[in-house]
Length: 477
Image (cartoon, rainbow, N blue to C red; front, top):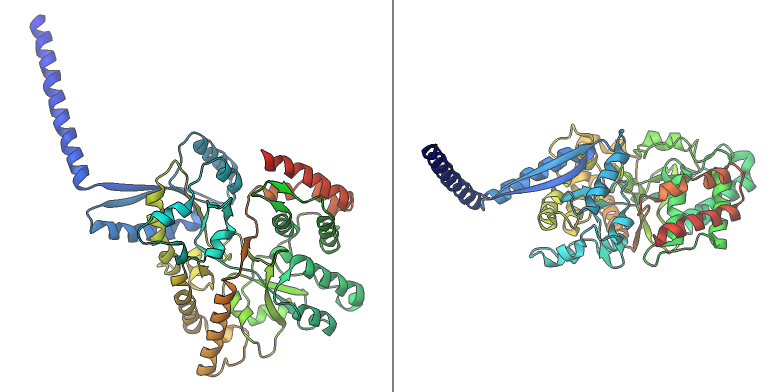
């Protein structure tokens, strides 16, 4: 029996020696051919472009003998289970376990940042040997800051450009044309005065076609940006100014509650503009080639004088991500628990990839091919716009656009495009703010208090105080 025990122990020792040798060999092989793996939480909307960027980075690292791949957890942004997904991510962050990258979508950015879950991306930019803050539109990065830190990184951005119906009374048009930028409340005043003074002729016109001109929820989220100080965690929703905003909101959207049919962001073709002329006092364009239409002088304009929507401080409002026509294509967060250095390296491949998509059958990539969104990288902004203009000219036919001054002459058309690009670049340098910086805002907006107010059950003063009380508690949590 002892002999068997000795033999058994010898076999274990020999097996252990082989295992150790095998392990050493595998470790030596890993040292010789290291593999870097980036974990990501990605909605289906972004998936194909992420895979294209993965190939780009893998090819770049291959020459250094490093293998690279991504491990992607996919989800449907509008599908069932999205709330459970958010709860699972929050649990992972609290436990110190997380993906290397996730898209912001409708996550509570402020809460994640204040609880120390997210990497300050400024530190990655500053420490990286080939990137600096000046590589990017710093005004846009500043719009995403909390207490001086950058916890969300937009890949692209864009603004809403508002135009006025050319058939409105000249007195209303003159007041609009006097503005270089315009706030939502200023638009409300124009529309309210239009209905009061000329209602017999224009009461069939709704305020606008989409976004903040069509949807009271979006309008309220813009107002939250004006009346909430997130850095100092203070609410100003109980002020007379906010009460006045609510009263104007009710004039425009009252009597139908929070939920209205919201037409998606429109593609501003000539036919669309002629149709909109019969339905809307204003239109707003942001995605697709809307910014180009906003910058060009039209031969026979249906809508006039497109100017950017700004908040009460005069900051241009960055469109939120999360729908296919938004010029803000995606906003990334890098958890502290993840490999943020590898994630930042990946982002350097992702930025040029989304501007040169390889699969036009994919709706997200097709929209980027024909969208005058601004890349966050300044070096990519003009080349991207010029590429999109070439695509519009070659594949979509320029006459599909609204006819503009110079459209029929090559040199005049080129000059018109150059002027449009210059104006877009100038506007892109303006101080900016994010239209809905935190995903909690829609929850507060969709409260019973706001619903009852719009239906005429509660007063503006009562609603303002109730919102102030609710959100003040949230701010100090």
